[in-house]
Amino acid sequence: MEPLQSLRGTVDLLPAQTPFWQRVEAVAREQFRRAGIAEIRTPLLEVTELFARGIGEGTDVVGKEMYTFLDRGERSCTLRPEGTASVVRAAIQHGLLSQGPQRLWYGGPMFRYERPQAGRQRQFHQIGLEFLGFADPRSDAEAIAIAWDLLAELGLGGLALELNSLGSTDDRLRYRSELVAWLEGHRQRLDPDSQQRLSTNPLRILDSKNPETQALLAGAPTLAAALAPESLERFEQVQQALTRLEIPYVINPRLVRGLDYYGHTAFEITSSQLGAQATVCGGGRYDGLVGQLGGPATAAVGWALGMERLVLLAQAAVDPAALQAAAPDLYVISRGAEAEALALPLARRARALGLAVELDLTAAAFGKQFKRADRCGARWAAVIGEAEASEAVVVLKDLRDPQGADLRLSPEALLVRLLA
RNA sequence: GCGGGCGUCGCCAAGAGGUUAAGGCAGUGGCUUGUGGCGCCACUAUUCGGGGGUUCGAGUCCCCUCGCUCGCCCCA
Image (cartoon, rainbow, N blue to C red):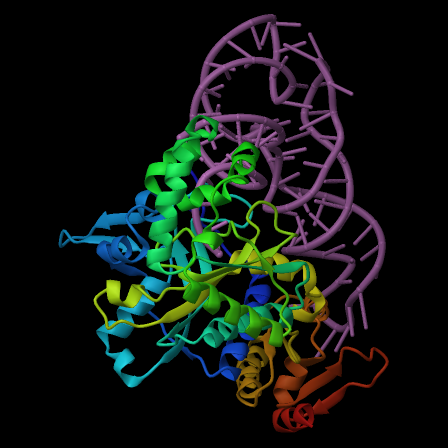
């Protein structure tokens, strides 16, 4: 029979990797706790319409990357490709917004049918933050600061914050027609992808990687010039707040988000160490989304971090020795029926007292069991053989001190000693 | 969806048309059924991702296919 394999673009995280994930998750949780941000957990599966309406029909994510299928009740369902739409849906559905502004975070798997690549999987994981009901420019800065500090706490270097303003909906519509009109006049100089996007998502042409397209864009009308004075003023305030927070940033006038719901502030945090998929964190303001999904008009800002990319960086930055699964305190060696019968409850009692205990279940020769005790890095070995079993005692051996004398103790005395 | 690279044991890895496919790590058993970290011995790929072809002969050459990987696209 052919061995079964995990689906393309999905990966198993083996015991050697999970400590890095746990570290990243622990740091994130702590940052959120300090900032008074509550966790929300939403289903992985949603009605397809949520994403079609929330993210935008014209986006690549919705157009060609979703895992969509009909369930047994003929409903069109989709494995979530991102988290924001679900969080907003849940907030509306449960009336969270009528209880005042919400600071929420979420984490978990997302699904996008794409060609796997460094830092990109079909099932990937994000940690995200959503501030619902916050319009002040300081909320943009605070959201960014939380992401920035989280990354700093992980000890990651080589990060850069890029910032832009997409302006209001009106600004964008106005700019969009200006840009399209201008580009139509130079259509033949555009790369094929960009020609395509001229009709589907023209703003995305701005961050095309094609050098000739970029050269052409140097003469094109800019988004910044199309912003209304109020939009510019708002962008200025966000920048001032970041400056006060001493968070370095660079303005990238070509930075555009791929999801339709973003407006005004858009940002990315990128790493120079990640290859082509350099964005570790991306986000921005989405004041229109809640209303678009049927909720009350609500200002909002948020971001998402890519866990795979973060872990890639964390693995390079964190000392693996510090993350090794803790070695057991006690390794229990036993041989012979009576001894084995004593060893089993001894291990459990020690665990109940908070000790990390590994019980050797092999019934192998003492030499083998000792070898394993040593290998696993345990501090102590408890040895029960036939002689000990008949006297109901246990030999306690300090594995770090080969010369030290072994102690013969009752199980109770042994536990007391280990806890001392 | 489109390009490039790669595919030999659980992991790393020799092998460049010619008898039985090195080695290291890990694993298992033994030397040693009562004491470990060292050492020694043994075992662990009828087979080189899969299929077809060329050849007297293929892991080594060709074709197809699958998988992995990097990039484009897209995004976190």
